[in-house]
Length: 323
Image (cartoon, rainbow, N blue to C red; front, side):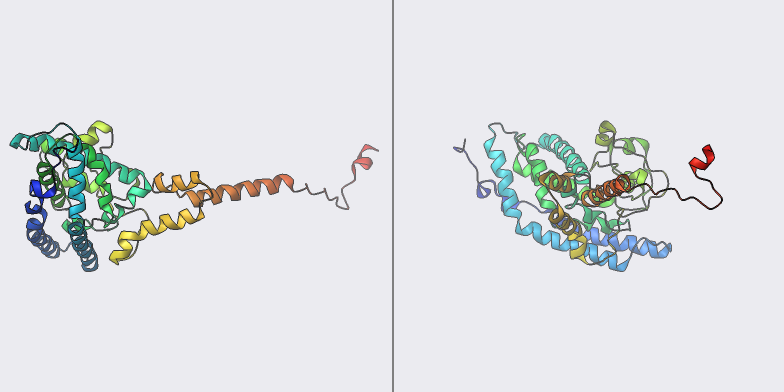
């Protein structure tokens, strides 16, 4: 299996282009252009502290990505090496690879909203009450563990270089859909691709908009798997329990802190599992205590003696009534 094993040096991974880094100046320029437009139109699209928090989170995330780049590349290479089939790095291989990555991104994104452990790696992207280009910078410092969702794509046999480029393009696509200034696009585009309109729904904290439109580049996955919702009224952005902080560390780790706090109060493995992999809003500990309190109140009512009837001076006893 490892006779033809290729290393990072063999495939020249250290020289692959970092498209996201190249695009960073353009993205910041567009952020400031959008901010200027919002000031010109007297719209409350940006908040200085929110922007600084998003930028800090994004820049630190870039640093983390650089630090673990070799480890991630090595993991991709390991799984690519162990499969006996290979797809040559031709121009056409980029198309199925991109589609496969987008399919994996849909499920990684959906699971990140449906299970609390994974939600902790993603909530940072949602805890802003603004919706603008800078929100795309808010990527959690712990998001890289979601790499496991992409292992099946690597094991299809796509060349690591093709996988790397397609993944960067998929990440870059997310930038332009974080804006309120692009309204609905022509119907064919809205039907196939994830657009700003679709993604505004996804970032909404309104109950009827929750857990919708997970698609990364293609919205067709949501249409197929029943998670699509068209944009109606203007959404309210953020999460259902606001963090009320601009501290990047708080914004990244507040959900992890709450998970650890709940785990310390778990009374058994079943509760611990529900805390980690139940829905983010299940509140396992709180609901347990409420149920326990209800049971205690019911028990008290059953066990408490019924009060003896009190006769008034004017009311005769039963014996007197019979006579």
